[in-house]
Amino acid sequence: MKAEIISVGSKLLRGQIANVDAEFLSRQLTALGMIVEQCTMIGHDSEKLKEAVRKAEERAELIVVSGGLGPSDDDITKTTLSEYLEVPLVLDRETEDRIITYHKNSDFTMPENNQLQALVFQGSVPLQNVTGLAAGMFYQTDNHAYLLVPGPFDELKPMFEKEIRPLLIDRLVEENAVASRTLRFYGLTEAQMNKELEDIVQENENPVLIVLPEGEEMTAELTARAETEDAAEQLLQKAEDTIRQRIGDFFFGYGQETLFEVVKELLKEKNLTITAAESLTGGAFLSALSSELEAGMIFEGGVVTYSSEMKNQVLGVPKETIETYGVVSAQCAVEMAEKAREMFQADIGVSLTGAAGPSSLEGQIPGTVWIGLAEKGQETFAKHYHFAYKRNKNRRQAVMSAMQLVHAVLKDEEIEDKVLMDHEAG
Image (tube, rainbow, N blue to C red; front, side, top):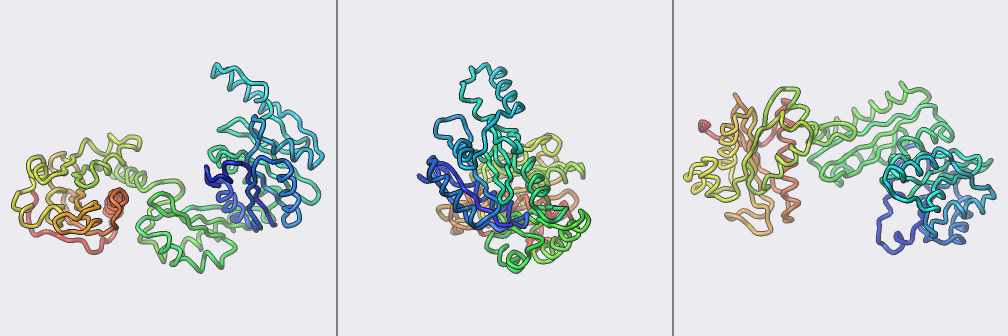
């Protein structure tokens, strides 16, 4: 099936907001086996919307229109398409009740035009908006299907996942079963990941693989279609096996789990505590862990020692180490990790020290980072990283790399290029 997306909103044309709706919808429809023929952006103009729909009908069977479902005078999508399709608008009572209840609970006086958000095409399938007020709708004729969705992404995304995706599978997808799986990675760039998986992305129509960045992490979204759920899951597993054979060293989890969440859960499972001594990251590592729920179960405290003096006076890193090797060194990273672990009686101590940038430090170019890891009963080590020249990006990457190092230790994975120090802790 061919699909076309029409995004309605003058702010899109002025560049005031990005068209994340079309990007998201394109990925989702492609994963369901549809071919997205074209994406079009128009302003709040009834005649241009009619013309865009008319042209879309010549190319596609499914026309998706995002935006223009609100109560304002320029929200013309429903009224325009009602006129174009010659189908009347009727009140969806469930949506109307939700709008009334919302205003009662919030003590706001409900404007009369807010009820416009509860209007849907007669004979359509109303789509509940769990994070907003405007209803979406799915309307089907003999030749075409029309999907109207809200413009705000935080309304569109949950509506698609909860209501639209199952509906499209039931009404428009030929296969009986559709299964999805998201693999999460850290430690390689989008370009590197695309290069490693290029043949799968380009050649596999089932399952469909979409590679996407999510902050500092990368995701591989797999969607398979088959006659049965078991068959779809088998297709997913085969694709996952191939992907993990190539880039399994960077894999850490599934679904929406972040690397922080995975590390926290592993620490809880193993009943281990963690601490950190941070220099260039200024407390960001422990901040990331403490942003997760139940952080108190895995650490009691940490320390930020930004200057050489504080590394010596607070942590107890010997002056000789700093004077001989510098703070941007494996030796300093090892001492920091060990001293922090001892100070807080933790099972794991992590240290982060380096040149964040934009200037060099101790002759080390920006992006030079050493991360130390001290584990109770194990030999302490440090690992060298080099990122780039952007200060805050270097700090974020240092935090993520430290988290990846902890993950590898907790999973008993082999760590390459680690530097061991020939000395005793403390």
